[in-house]
Amino acid sequence: MTGLLAGLAATGAPAQDRPPLPETYEQLIEMAFHHAQALQAGHNAGWGMDKATSYDVDLSAGTITFFLPDGKKAQAAAQLLGTWNPNDETFLWGWDHPSAPLGTATASAALRGHASQHGIDQLSTPKITCDFEACFSIAATAILVADLQGIYRLDAGGPWAYIGFDTVTLSRQ
Image 1 (cartoon, rainbow, N blue to C red):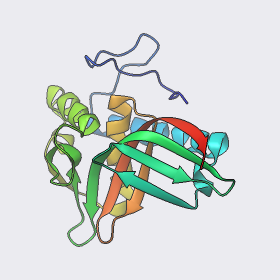
Image 2 (cartoon, one colour):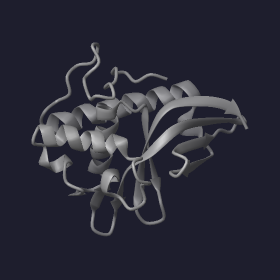
Image 3 (spheres, rainbow, N blue to C red):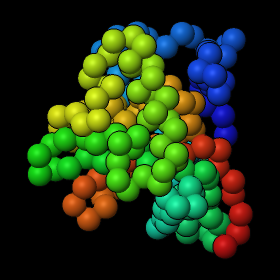
């Protein structure tokens, strides 16, 4: 599945058919929210992400697997974008997270680079104070900048983990 917006190349340069990324916090958050919603709708309609009966995230292997009721499974390369702690309402980015295997939080690192380049301090510090609702949009900025194909939010037994994933492959269980 491809994103609605064409991606960034590994160099961080925008693809030719992609509008330039916003250079302000508010505009980037708004674009990321709408982008993530569109991707979610595509996954729900395309392969039934919203109907998954369970999932498995293996950060060491860099994968997320969704198990569907019709006997199919959907698998994709995945990485930790960050986690939200409900106790202090803070979001910790994957690029500075002890649970992210070394070198695997490339989407959050790409966002950090974009934010630093454009002086968006809210997205270039390791920990951000935000409420639960705002956290989804904040995490979605990383999938927008890195051109991942989706985001999945899960309760990790206290904190909420935000997982970014790439192209989904369907197969039978």
